Image (cartoon, rainbow, N blue to C red; front, top):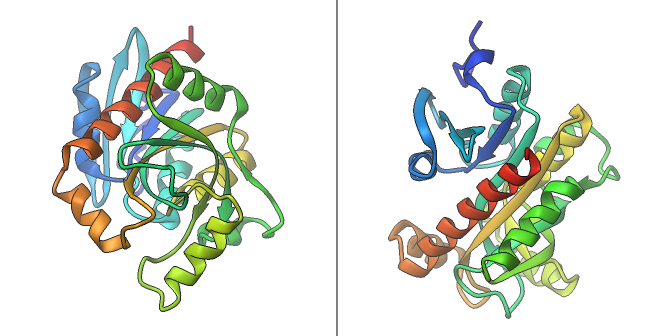
Length: 243
């Protein structure tokens, strides 16, 4: 039986899953896989399954935001997936983070909407220690600029007091903002699966959100190199975790 939104069956999904937001990024990840095959593409959810260094890997796009992430995660878990790494983008909240740097999230501020519907707000959104540690190790092995720490997941780029909110979380030593990590971590812990998140900085702290996102859409080389690096360390982390 196929899942309602992903349109995938259990025999089409690996236990190890990469979760980009953008469905086009799924195709770019597929270039790293052996025997990659697109198994479904419905709405924002594109799914490809292949292998990396002999380890079965599925890649599923989650679209934008926590609600879409929640749908993808629940249906992938239904199909037997157990280990998840988000490979996403983020806006830097600290001045020392540059475009193309990687943020490895140890935890996330829960300003998303989805996680609040599952559990009280005091419940923490934290990553899996082992997989997150491997992401850090692989970043250092390849000499990729990275920082490990807390990110913030939010609901909109366009609220009237956006800069005020950004300044507040920056002052609390939060590294970066995205829209999906808190939902991923919260739901993964509730469902008893493992999740990590590595984010490519596409907006620095001196840019407004729209300018930064436009630079990513235009595929500026430094930003695209950051994407290649997060894909590489995520695949290497899963390969070692399963060795």
